[in-house]
Amino acid sequence: MSNDEIASVRGADRIEAMDVLRGVALFGILLMNITMFGLPESYSDPTIYGGAEGINLWSWIIPQMAFEGTQRGMFSLLFGAGIILLTSRLEAAGRTDVADIYFRRNLWLVGFGIVHSFILLWLGEILFYYGVTALFLYALRNMAPRRLIAFGAAGMILTAVWNYADTSHALDLSKDNIQAEEILASGDELPADLTDAQSEWEDYVSDWKPDQEKLEETVETYKSGYFKILTFQAPTNTHYQSWWLYRYFFDIASMMMFGMALFKMGVLTLEKRTSFYAITALVGYGIGLTINYFETIWIIKNEFSVLAFLQAGISYDIGRLAITVGHLGALLLFCKSGILPWLRRSLAAVGRMALTNYVSHSVICAFIFYGFGFGLYGELERHQLYYVVFGIWLFQLIASPIWLARFRFGPIEWCWRALTYMRKPSLRHPIPKAPVAPSL
Image 1 (spheres, one colour):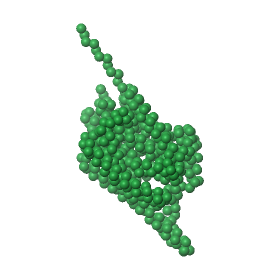
Image 2 (image 1 turned 120 degrees about the horizontal axis):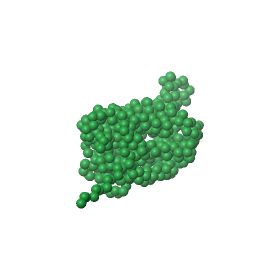
Image 3 (image 1 turned 30 degrees about the vertical axis):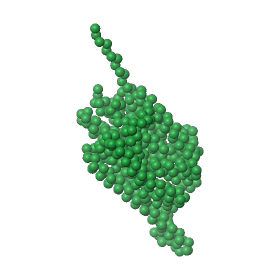
Image 4 (image 1 turned 60 degrees about the vertical axis):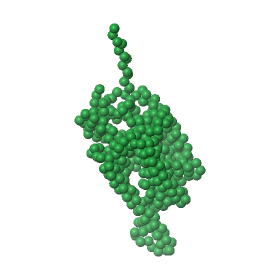
């Protein structure tokens, strides 16, 4: 048996709870991303497109309160845990090229992210960020859990302060705009600083709530051919994979460090008491749902104004992190309980093929919504998008176990492993050797 086979995370060696978490997080990411696939500029604000009344409003409220920002948080946690899982098993197998494998693995992930965004046309791409961020965390793999949590907390505080600063600046622009309108109404001339502030606020509002002309242009583009969509998205993808990498680096790195710590502490491997997971879920949901409820009600009462979104955003990070903790506790409690084994096995299979399933979301949705496929972009109401989500979930819950019953890896996982170890691993499960008949 080769060293890479010894070090690989194979069937019996896998930790089912982590695979279940990964499968659920993958489904949750699609739940949040579907509006980006099917509607223009409507991820956060349902009044822009797709309907904001009745069932469409509830199709915004439920994800907003229970899932916004949490699924990428869980996925980042699990990626961090995977850093420890990979490197510890390679070291235990006696590999002397752990660093080579680790960095090659994540550099290829960066490459997958570039292809996923620019070639497969997905604006919400995350692999690029994970690959780059992971390069900085290798040196922390042997750090004690408490220190990892401390560093992660420091990064989250920095992210929250940055978010608060951006929000405060926008709120100041809103106040300046009101003052400028009062001065103009009185017939006086605006000072230069208020002129600049008013212009910046108008740009901010137009970005948040684009006019009908821009919406129609976006819909028309996504209903067109592949190369027109690629050209349309390229500047945005370039911005996301440059400035946004800096903007959200500490957010992603912090969650990865939390995941590294939780794995070392045995939280993700179900080594804690059942009461620990129950309390974690209750406290996380208690804090998070309370905060998110008041944020959501505030936005609705203020008719989805840009100012209301900004004001609600002040407590966003607290609510998001608390709900993430709640999800983590509830899902690990589910895994520890042993109930619904068939569902756990199916979700674990989805999680084992997370990379393949994640990329397939983009491929499937592109053919459903874009012009080179069925061209349904902008055609479905908000709630109808979730029929697509549930359909994809069902398909992957069925297809993933069937695939893994025959093959050791998902197709993209197999490719990633081959590129990482620079040799082709066996894709099919080994055929058991027939027992040798005893000689007479």
